[in-house]
Image: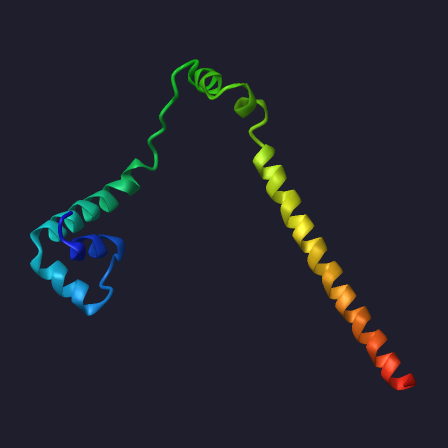
Length: 113
């Protein structure tokens, strides 16, 4: 796309800002892209019942090409993300508890002093 307005019009679907709507109304390239998108959206519901069967050996072939460490445990990134979430939550709880304890200690020191 040579025109920056065509680029922005493709990134912001729908009416969007008024200047993009005016551009879409005049630009043949953007109108053609919108027509292609509309036709694809109309065709997608018809493909809901289509089931494609993968050829035999495709999964093992892909896993072999990925290498040993990538194919060892595909769930590992999920476990790492879950552990990071729990660690962040534990850190937040710890920081809140420390702030609460510091506030109580300060209140008591003011009451005594």
